[in-house]
Image 1 (cartoon, rainbow, N blue to C red):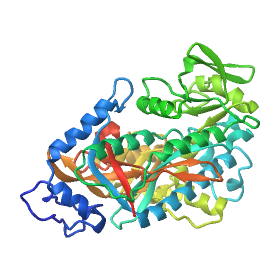
Image 2 (image 1 turned 180 degrees about the horizontal axis):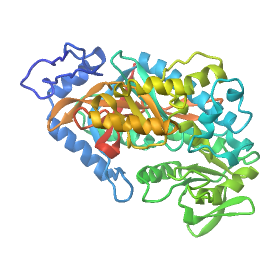
Image 3 (image 1 turned 180 degrees about the vertical axis):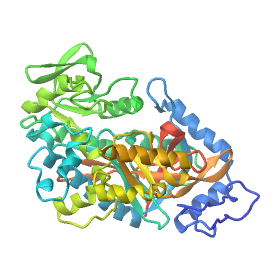
Length: 473
């Protein structure tokens, strides 16, 4: 069933919902209560001019995605709105899940209690592409993390976790930039009780200081980036500038005598804490040789003179098959029931699960375990018969390299397209900063939107962008 916000004479007022659950409007086309003022204000606005104003603001501020050769980050001017009640439940669920993931990473490189208890097969850990055997027994892993969970709302209206990102999730600076750009041009006054996401910088600064090795009261902190080739290069610079710490690349670092040193403005200094934002995070390459990350960071970390945020080896928790066991982690490590559920994910390494999945693979979403940016995903109901047959063959040949998830038709949100409001699919990436014992969730997070009609892969590499996200009382 589709609905229409009445008054067809105005582009915003003529907004028509699609068949998916819509964030702003009910099935009969009426704005939800917390969206009423926004939709009324948009009905009086020149949407094309509004969109242009927001993009010009971002361009002037240099907010880009795609590295040094990238383009201005695209932000839709229509904010997503979350009520205080929904946010309270979501915040608690995100923090709970984060604490369990942090406990899991420590356990992976420690006693493996979750395997010993029979709650997770050892093969899930040992076949993960970002599992690092050389980190076994390194006690400094209980440090700080910055995680970003990808949440989607399906037809039942419930938010569920599609993926967990604990290696190098980008977006904190983009969500703060989106807030500034939209606030400067949106012809609707924001509620006074709206939460401010800019507190994320203070939270991050505190987490980096607290991650310092034992006995270091005033740590030397750096942000480590691959350089301009990294897609989030702008964000790396923004974080370093806001926190007042150096932005460094591998060429300005050296490891000597179990300590890391950085050359900054012509001077050499010891580094105590690295906020790692590099695409490379593995200690061994495909050829078995040490990577530059290992050459620079491993020995100082092993000796306890350097803390890395996010820690070396934590990518094991990013694995898409590990995602299938996160609810189990919550119960095992925290002795709590999960407050936030996962999108059902199938472990194809289990022969019985594999057989069941292959029998209905045309109904499922199939993903490579270590894929990024939406690459390699096959959405069964949207794929051609030939594509479904091909992916079934590939999965049957190497089931350990794939996972299957139940299809969730992502909710939609009013989005400016060629001067009109149209429904486009969205997800939500809330960010959480802390460790196993404490977790601070950034208010709102970054709503990501797919600008192509019908596309349910919301990623900047596939014509996606962002939206401001309001948390209101």
